Amino acid sequence: MIDASMTKRMEEATRLTRAGKLQEAMALLQGASPETKWEETPDQTYQGGNTFDGTCQVIDEEGKASRSYTAKPAAEASRPEASAPGAFSAGDIKMPAEWRDKWMKFRGEITQPEQAKGATEKPRPGAFTAGHFTHQVGRRDYKLYIPSGYHGQALPLVVMLHGCTQSPDDFAAGTEMNRLAEEQLCCVLYPAQPASANSSKCWNWFKVEDQQREGGEPAILAGMTRQIIDTHGLDTSRVYVAGLSAGAAMATTLAMTYPDLFAAVGVHSGLPHGVAKSLPDALGAMQGGTGPLGGAKQTTTWASTVPAIIFHGDRDTTVHPSNADRVAAQYRALRQARAQVVQGKVANGYRYTHTTYHDEKGQPQMEQWQIHGAGHAWSGGSTAGSYTDPKGPCATKEMLRFFYQHQQN
Image (cartoon, rainbow, N blue to C red; front, side, top):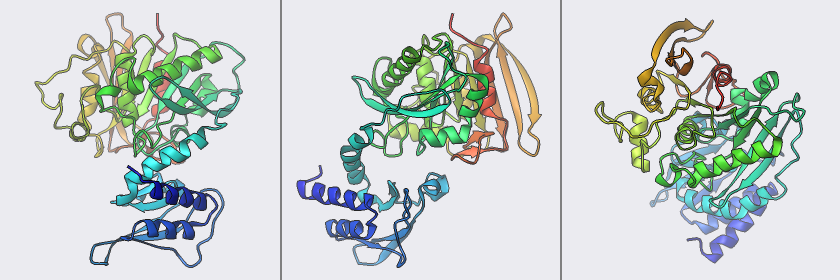
């Protein structure tokens, strides 16, 4: 719980931060936590936009500096190497770990309503606009891209779920899905996971309440998708969902819980549905060794007939590559289809193994792309976004190609 005096201090610190008066804000927080000492560089000034430069030190009980962190611009802080152990980025300010939960709760209470105010823009062709969706379960912001070739016709819709620490803008920049949507005429919806729902902005794929139809985050995402379809008159038979990492895990959850809504799913560096029921389960599953699907003899009752395309780097140290096969095992096509395997290599890039599974009619129902040498990153993505690797085959292009081969009956 945050007491009244702490709330007042945080309100004032937030106001000072927005005004660019970081030194005063830090002094106020220092007064709120005697064990924390903040230091600023002598020439610190407000840069405009969202960039602050500064350092902070965490002081141990004996008064000695145990760690030192440097605040980085927001664009750098979104990348994995910018995250310092024990530190946490609150907006554009680096905070010690002891303040994380309090600040996150406070930021959710104070800043979320302000961000929501006036957030919805009128969508128009060729624009990337912001909006928000409210469901009885919860509320989420989103970004929506409508291609300039849209004139009211029933276009396909692709729902893109970002990974941890990412945002719709970051994910759009890294995957370049909007550029391809402009060329191939589809709308793209990017739901946003707020830090108030998960401190790292991960979709909560590992929580039981967020693994069910008509409940938790799946219900919010499905409801948002249906609202966008209805509002813009999109093609209900050509609705697709894709994601990266935690977003990929939630994408496959949507394929399991809403097979009537999504015609195909793209899973990049993700995990199976229902493999975890808690955070410890999630960490074990990510390591590839524990959880309901951890052993070769362990199975899951979950299965989906939704066509799936799966990407994973075989050098992924964040989500173990074995999860790609575990995801594939949940799609019935794998058990009934014949496989066609193709080896390839990107010019000046990675080798890959591309396996396609066809049904009895010869139609492709599932594809697996194993990228040899790639880590935890969107294959073929742009460095304009985080967690991308341009040296792999273009996952965005291949997913759209696969998606367009499928539609609901």
